[in-house]
Amino acid sequence: MASYKVSAYVRGDTAFIAAEFAGKAKHKFSGEFVVTVPRALELVEIHTGGGGVTATGINGTVHAESGGGAIRVEDVGGSVTAQTGGERVEIGNVGGDVKVHSGGGRVAIGAVKGSVNAYSGGGDLVLVSSERDAVLESGAGDIQVQRCGGHLRVETEGGNISLGDVVGPVDAETGGGSIRLASAKGPVQAETGAGRIELDGIRTAHAETGEGDIVARLVSGADRSDSSLETAAGDVRVFLVSSLNVTVRASIDMASGHTIRSDFPEIRIRSEGEWGPRELTAEGSLNGGGPLLKIRTTTGNIVIVRSQ
Image (cartoon, rainbow, N blue to C red; front, side):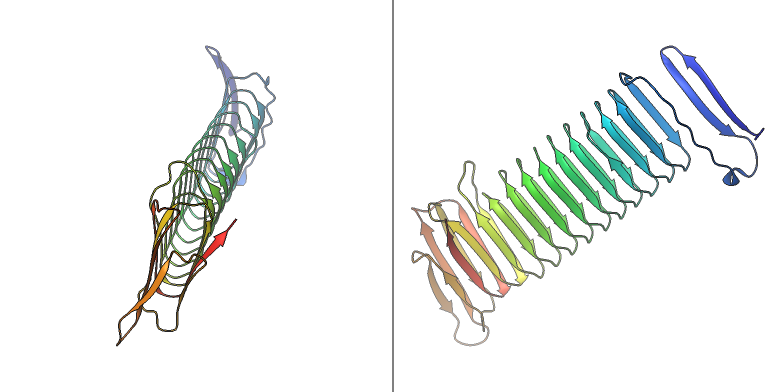
């Protein structure tokens, strides 16, 4: 005990509480510190070599760092920065921006009024909502976002991506998992090495998968531009509202045993090639034409459905 020193002192308008172990076997010693502070505190900084960190009920900014312990932050009026070597991170309601880095643990973030930037070396990432832009990256885990009020960018090396309502553009990429999106008012970029892509309530999208089906539901709206849906091996099913003005070009490179079906008589389907792999193409303009919708699969079916 004599080798463990706790110091408390003040410099300017800042109070410091520091604990240091001067012995040789500090891995056999552990301590817990509970510090009660006024809620109106402007800034809290917590650093620990390996233990867990909890901070709640602060109006100002919180910076929390652990060499390997879990971090939990809740009910903070300002911004939050949290970093740990590999444990989980839990962030509750935050009035400012959130920045999180975990070496490999799960990261869960609640309602954030600012922007979000979160990274995990291999754990899952979960975000309830952010009112501004959000960036989430994982080395291998799944990513889930319920709502984003700005530009959303998510990337994982191999996990699944599940996204709710997004006010701005969406950039989603995974090395081999599936991608699902409930709705987006901005343009959507979705790419997976091998997985299914489902895009609902979108205006413009560029989606590509190396192996898997694509399902997309296009709706009308301002700032629409050209879209493309491509898979190397899989079916593509597209739902188009009746009032949508769009120009459709669809193709199956190796169509033997596969077909193109359409609910719109304006889209004309024709077959090319008498010997070898047969190619099917379809083209047409709906409601006078508009932004180009390109649909392509190397081997699979294409279905274009009229929706309300």
